[in-house]
Every structure is written in structure tokens, then in C-alpha cells.
Amino acid sequence: MTDFQLIEGVLSQLIVFVHHLHWSYIFTHMLLAYASIDLEKSHSLVNRYYHYLRMEWWPLLFGIIYSLLYIFKYNFDFEHTFWQLQSFLFALVFEAFIIEKMVILLKKPPRKK
Image (cartoon, rainbow, N blue to C red; front, side, top):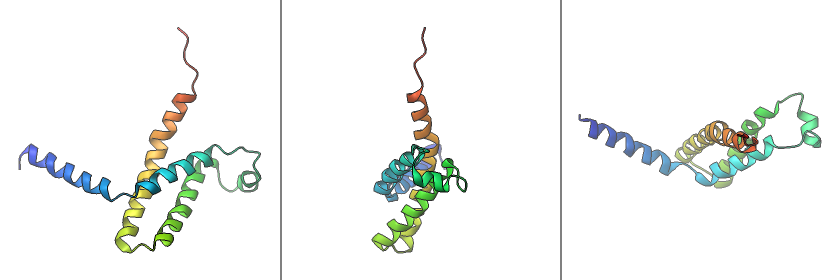
């Protein structure tokens, strides 16, 4: 097996993976996760449950609930449920490592020279 065949095999599997993800779920999950992080501490829901669950865990909680609602709304079979789980994990990782870091960089004041 040559290097070209190896790269072609990996890229073909990556294309299949990206094609099967539920992109509408991923984008709406990231919006909900970002909104849940930015909730004011004065909000009554946040004050009621803040002792039990720190704000960093809210995107995970919202993602699980939203994913279950998504599965039951569209009445997924096993294969679609598997890809929904993959989409949930992809959205969680993408939101945690990329979106949050970009927001932190955008909120930083520019350095003066």
C-alpha cells in the first residue's frame, strides 16, 4: 500500500463521516451551548440550579436533552441514532475547543504598541 492509497482511504472515510453528521443539530447545539454559557447569574433558572451544576457543564446538559428531543422528534432508527451521537460529540468538542477559544480571543482588548 502506497502513501497515496493510504491518504486516499483516510480522506474517503473522513468524507463519509462528515457527510453523515447532522449539521442542523450541530449548529443549533453550538448556539444553545453558547447561549447557556452567557446566561446572566441573575437569571432565576441559573440561581436555582447553580449550586448543583456549574456553568461549564450546562452545554453538556443542554446537548443531551436537545439530542434526545431531536432523536424522538425525527423517530430515528439505530443507524441515525448512532450518527446523532457522533454529531453530539462532534458539536461538543467543536464548541469546547474552537468556539470558546475564538470568543475569548474576540473579547480580549487589543494590545497597544
